[in-house]
Length: 438
Image 1 (cartoon, rainbow, N blue to C red):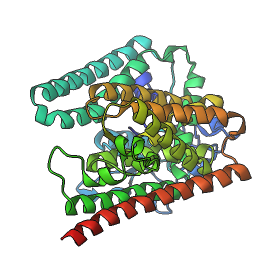
Image 2: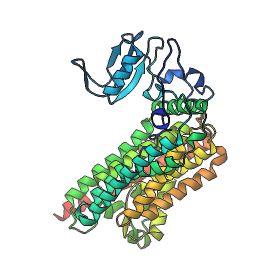
Image 3: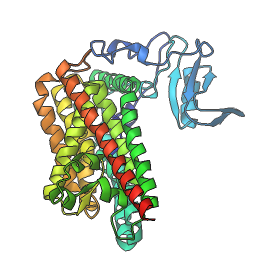
Image 4: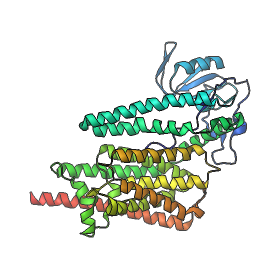
């Protein structure tokens, strides 16, 4: 999974030839800020410190040497004109913002260069084509590496997911984008709307999502301890997975249906928990910001269960583990949310969600030997169905959540916390039994 906020609408550097004229005293995007939306707030742009007010310059996001002076990330470099800002931009790779004397806020880099002419579709597609073939070459190289050197298969597939498939699919989707149909005014309006929305999402509270990811990390630490204390000879299933994951024989024959929940709290290895943690954070923060914090626990738990059921009855492996079903449920749920609010939410978000679905599907096909695609599909379907069931009740950035939703959310949180307690109880039991046996 890749952060869904990445890959915004094509900026003018990729879509059209630009002219960086900032007439003194003018802020070109101010009239285009969507003030009727929660993210239509100019205060989302960082306020300049007193030391930079009344100056031209940039805020750097890397360590850089300029004229013999060293600057750290977050430092402000002041210059004498817009032309000198352009020289800085040519030499500094990572710039988080730009400022001018007549504006007291840091202008995000995406807003520095407005569109001045419609997109040249031929030139646009040439750039897309170049990116596509670079990504394709990387994908083919990684696949060949995985085939020729099976010991590097996992590494190759992970590299494929992170650096190959996303730019490849993004290029394919960008090829069909009707950028030449947009007027200059529409291009600039979309640019401003997208940037302010991205800034707004990045400013929303994420404590609940961080706690959720942190709890998964705590469970994984517990797994690591119990697996270290109770090693299982290869190719056996790890002790932690045997005790609390979706071991299908234990569910069918032993009636341990609680595993439908606890399996979504465990992970197979460090890479698994890192990828799922990042995915849950990136999707969860959007759900929390757009609709309701209460819905995150409901969507996650329901999708974990539907994913587990799909794996139990349709999956081939004797055991399954991971939060992927719940995460795919969040993805499916957000697709429903962005469909309902398509007139308010910038379309790049929905595009990125669709792109994630395509990449996950390809990734699942390539890694079918060790990926539980049934759980992925079951979780995704669960999220979509839940979104459709709640469709009429969904509100964009509500000031408060209905009592019934809050009550169900509290119940879901309770079930998930009980699941964590059950996992550690099982871990304690197996460790205690080994200790007594010794």
